[in-house]
Image (cartoon, rainbow, N blue to C red; front, side, top):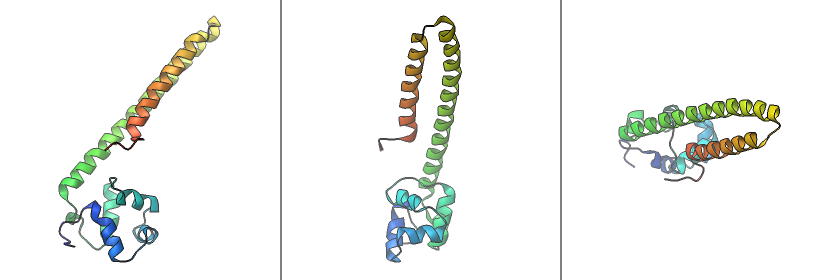
Length: 138
């Protein structure tokens, strides 16, 4: 394998060439075994993970495709922004639920609280599915 153009897809090949298990690679790189499994299944890796793997395989980090690295950083930044957005939604939901709880308690009409709760449950559920890509759309 040409060492000048290593991609994340080659990580498994490099590991198998050395007859290492995923657990051995994880131990040598200081990463979690699950992280190795995710990378080998095609998921993105952050910059620190790439540095650890490059060190173990004794390749320069510059050997990894620069465009791929930029794309991974962009995806990572977008994911961080999506998670921040989820936290904002949760904070807004808590505030509105507290507000509607007191209104419902005072009026003894729990329909308002129930509808607000169900609405936020659906909104946060859909946003979470999109943020964490639970159905693995590619």
